[in-house]
Length: 99
Image: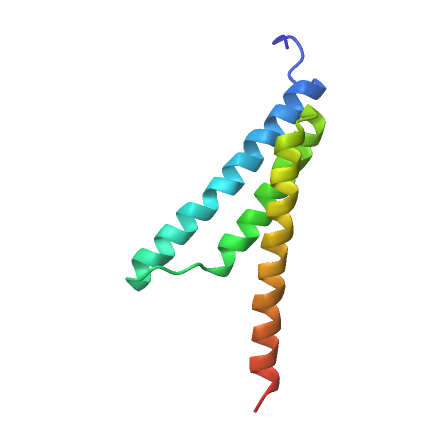
């Protein structure tokens, strides 16, 4: 990985990996700030969106790296985050439909 070609595939995938890690880490910042604002521990919906976006980018990066441990870990996480969002949206739609 030389500095001569900043747009090489390796550099692009490293950027994807770092952006994924930043997105994934943002979920903790969002959760912490929301909890401080409310004065109790809560998990805001943005937590799950940051989890999915970061998880998908890290999953793509792990596939590129051919890292089976990372691939399995991220794929399971993305499934769980997506399921949580589905449950949140389903509950919200039930609350708006019921009188």
